[in-house]
Length: 266
Length: 273
Image (cartoon, rainbow over all chains, first blue to last red; front, side, top):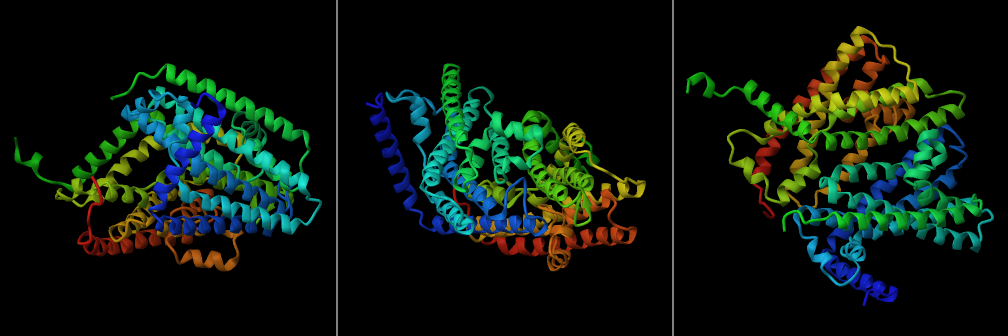
């Protein structure tokens, strides 16, 4: 059934629905999440205000433009926490406990199965907050931001989410070999925090790492450049190319991973 | 079996606890190293941002040159290694999974077990920290004005910072005894620490009133104070009074912890496990 793309999408949506229904039982978690996200947002805004209290431009970005970077960072972070991270945590746990066999023996594609099993519904709060920050930024800028930028932004955001998924899946797949990958997840989360600021802020070696090795530049900075009309349009094409490369790479890593998997303890 | 060996001694207890912590981190040294690198991404981000700001302002911001900022944040990394503590989220896990039961049946308060465990880990983390600090030094070219007094006082102040932060986080962890949703409270405290400790940015770059407020709270004594001691931004009087305040905070919160624990433990109900 899921050999066809339509089947895969149906299967993903079905899993997300079950996950969402499961989460709906715990309504209080929504308020806890909202509260925590609001604090994180306030802290981020204070950091930006502090920086621009001492300067007018950071790495070529004005304050409202930097708000857009922060907005994108929060949105992609929200997607990460809602759809990607819960699945990757589950994957690593399944490898450790030997329960991954249940996913591998299903007739559907194994990468799809491990990628859509879990959903942390209330983290969507971050996606909403991030969109709010983007709206604020666009309103402050009042420049030549038109529908082209809006469409380009949505496209860049989808590419960004796909890149982040590819990186997270690749690292999680290492758990087939290393078993204890929680420290690497911590490292990835730390590096993701670097995306809160545009990559032009960082010194050369770090900028290169964040552009080519862990392409946060394409995942966060490019969507922010698009919505603030700072973008060179060819960068979107490069971003699309990087996305395809990242997804193909993650697929290859996944195949290598399961070919090495022998079950840990089941 | 001779009597002296079975007799309880706090020193021996702490030494054994520290050895367990040490051996745990040596055993998982690769994991510890990756964790260490993960922790160090944070100050590198702040350093890059503030060096950028300093560069745009003609080379200095709030009295910090680019090289002084590098010294601040590189020292930050060692201070962070030392002030790592048993955090409230770990308490949440311990209570939700019913893991606290193991400790309650023991005759000694779990605080000592956790505290000594973390002390042991510091030695492994510090050893792993040196190569990372060397790389950061080569990249960011910090400027240190080290004196024997500063180094000696720093060696005391980082342990003081550890003690204050450990007791503070342990105290916060008690909230888990009353509610399983204490993470909302921690969010506020962690944000407070970020802004009021010198963790995000040296407090001199903050508005004056924030800087004054920070002196009345415990956070500053766990981050900025030890850093300033080493990089030589404090005179000897400020160093001595800071060390005294670290002792006062650790003891004061220690008393609060002792009292709070008695109230908390009667509320304890393991959620699962």
